[in-house]
Length: 283
Image (cartoon, rainbow, N blue to C red):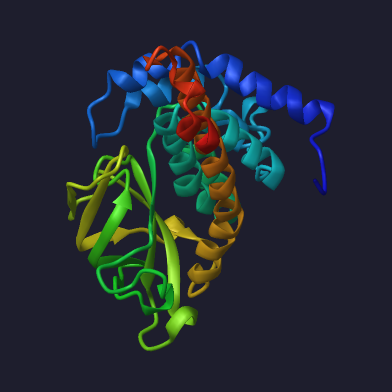
């Protein structure tokens, strides 16, 4: 290998597994499929797992983003315990990081500690019916109104929608300007004109659509600079996308461990299944 984990990194990974394994799987099993598991988020907040997404939040200074390696270790280790818990944690980070990275001090103070404590559910509202990977093709419009804006349009396939307490929303503030005409906003989930519905999908976490019917947003709910929202989205995705690979490794290791256990316990043809050549070769 080109590198190895140091003692502190191994200790951190072990801590994640040790605190998560006794508490989280039973809560996951008790959740409702396709809905936000608030009990799970609250427990992860109490265990200090969510706070590791936001260095300094426990001391009232949530102004730094997690190091990429620590985020990878957190996601890989948690995935080895529960993929549902890992996904819930990752979605909290994805929805909150536009606020952490680009928001004002007031925006950070309002939302980040609540997410770290497991008291608020975040969502990252970028994708639309006709704008996914091509985020510069966003059509959700933000029309100027009384010192703020009104959002009109639709978002689709949004994780944690429509149950989130707030959304990092990306909307078009300048028509026909591509990526240079997109702005980011933090929008509370109870804002008038905002509605949505769950989508029935093969997913362990909630995914839904959102409809914005002239939803009012204030000037102080702009994240970063006007027409610079595309860079807000990409900055968050640049950090979280590499850790998806770490999540997959943790999940794959958990699957292999479960397979080895089963093959050692399951009796077939006069012995454990692992002694069968076709099984042992695959493992």
